[in-house]
Amino acid sequence: MSSNRREFLKQAGIGGGVLLFGNGIVSAFESRAGENLVHEKGAEGTHQLPPLPYEYNALEPVIDEQTMRLHHDKHHAGYVKGLNNAEAKLKEARQANDFVLIKHWERELAFHGSGHILHNIFWENLSPKGGGEPDGKLAKAIEAEFESFDAFKAQMIAATNAVEGSGWGVFAFHVPFKKIVILQAEKHQDLTIWGAIPLLVIDVWEHAYYLKYQNRRAEFVTNIFDIINWKEVAGRFDRAMS
Ligand code: MN3
Image (cartoon, rainbow, N blue to C red; front, side, top):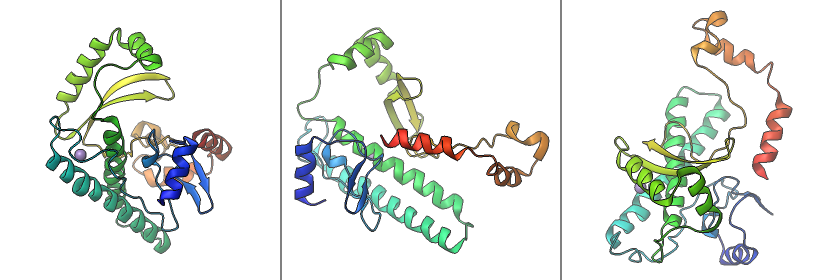
């Protein structure tokens, strides 16, 4: 992102949502609070590694400089590279109408896309001036849902400690339920990109088709396109974009 554009975004106070510029859509769902999370989806459609919002040593002694350098410059950068690669490979597959590796590249998309978005949020969640407790609306919401900040904090710590294997503790706002929740993400790629808002879903649990189609899931999935309410899907897209 050019420094001019960065400055414009900062001055405009734009941190999230959908931004339209001459070269198309700038980050529909990738953005969050900080302006350096507003990524360009430029002509190449590539994602970029945002710089840390503070110095590498700014979070000492809680997180050491070397860890920050490796975590941001190597690990997070790897997710960005992998995400761009997965998108490129999926584009190639569509163009060739060759989906023999579809499971592999969808997994790569989920793994690297989730890694990218979660690390963006992680860096922004931290600050050398952090700590204490929230106030305002968030404090009220936490009190209403969890009874007290201490109870919330205890559950967040317990849930994060108990993540099986690699993963994340996640404090989230659930849009359809209009509710704050604490979640665990085991691994992070199971096969979603965090932050995605569903527009169209197709149930392929066996209960959804087995009586009629038995093991012929592909036939069910093809046929369902004859009954999709695209007007409703488009409405969801409009609402998600706004
Ligand atoms: Mn990490």
